[in-house]
Length: 432
Image (cartoon, rainbow, N blue to C red):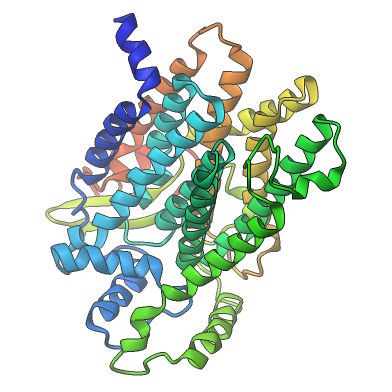
């Protein structure tokens, strides 16, 4: 048995395959519930159908990638709940696998990678978004895998560094093609690249200017800084604009090259407009505290009362806040870089919404932060366990699973006893 465990340690792709199968199975079971459009699917399913029909522009507030992927699912399985939600479910699986891959590359050991993937699987927001035809699940998948490939490029040699960097840039361009909220992460990735290079130069007692060179570098060996950043910008921007290609063939109001650039201003105006108050609006500071989740659906459907509540797993989300603090403490006490990086990533993901000019906020904006908090938990457990295998993270993952099973009926549109059946899960009045 011990030999088999060691074999898995050297073959993470086998573990990743098993995780992917488990995640996809979980996300796919009863994916056709509810049988009707729910919440913001009302915007994106018709927009996806318009892309399939090439009928004309619809829902131009956001770029096209997420809607193109929903359209691909509808092309395969039709204009029905499975068709709407198939591609989001695959993106959910990709997100869980991205957590596993990032932690494997970051820490080089199986245990925290498995724990992080399990927490992502049970954090509930990924589960609900993976079964809903909306955009954020695609945003998280592309963004996370862009970071994974950048991390992979750090350890590469020769041409591999360049190709991994280009692939990462393309994925970040696709993330931007889902939602503009990916743009700050491209800037953060560029800043992290420069900071790591500068730190490497300081530790090697070299002049700071050597950080710009590609020679004799500890990270991203052979990749000069200025070309790397130029490539990051050029590839991501090019990929972003290429995703508008189908719109040039619309029957009504087809895009032209000047119109493509003009549309960006229209998108900005729509995204920054002042909106009317909404029942489920919430402020950024309330999202980590789980103060105002969102009912995506609560109606009589397919012979029963059913509900879908977008709410984070309290064990993961509230416990994750302690993990972020622990990561900062690890830096203060031990000057541990990896915990600091995870804490800063989560903090930045929330701080972005202090700056973004949105008149209304919603809990699903916390989707990326919910992913990063799983990373922070796994890294914090790994750092403070210090190889003693005390099992704290396994107990925490087990508690997360118990909470997930408890909330499952109102995450997966399971039949409820009555129209008041939801009250069993309403711990605080603002959840109702």
